[in-house]
Length: 171
Image (cartoon, helix red, strand yellow):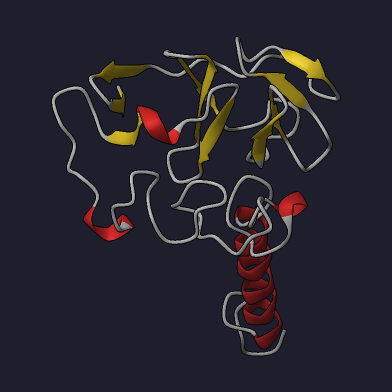
């Protein structure tokens, strides 16, 4: 190197730029909003909904309130949904909060992490009594988050919610 230091040479600058671009790409990988399909942690539902909305609801919270005017956090935490928004025998994935709320039986509400325990992908949907991860096909029971079908081997961790009247809040 004649007259330049390694930190200011054109080669070092290109290397730093490539490393920064690679780090950004890794940060946007599985579990983030990488812009790819469900396998990349992007639009897991495949419906074009933004990451801050529940699966299958492109621009509104389940209660029909526009996302940018959702109710502020209350004493019991932020309102996720109303009880009417969670179908009996099903559930809703809340992407922004990374939580899935289920109602296995009428009036019995459960909440679990929406991060798959296999490779940290965001789960995509709830159907036929299971929370489903589109990345590798794992399925978790809506009753307790336990694994119904792998490759995941660990249950979805429970999340704390409170149900007061018709309001479901993350605590």
